Image (cartoon, rainbow, N blue to C red; front, side, top):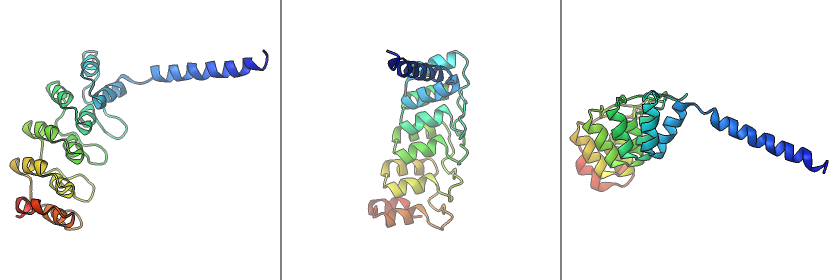
Length: 181
């Protein structure tokens, strides 16, 4: 019995620490996690409790970033209705629109564009625009949306490439007529 007690005691201490650490999670982090999961009820609850809709993490990501990246349209719409800034920029220059386009979430891209987000924002990463991302991915639906909202076909990355150049290099020949300046 004396040999079992130290192991049991250690296991109980570990369990207690795990429980305490989950309790120590900040409400802002829980809001971002709920947004990333698309758990609209939890998002509503946290906001009703006074958690800031703009709550950022150490990288500058907001709940809107998280919901947009994961493709949770209803959560994105709700966050915008609750006053989320439409175009927050993370520390690495990423916006919710950029995340949604990068993940191919056409419906999220449409919601953000319809709410007035700047279609030509360039992250600090090599001057890449959303059209560059969509052209590289071969995503005709997103390219069409971006062009409809004023996407710049002539934008150049720091390497000099236009969206058209990326589409051609990736073999997305169906996109050439759309992207030709």
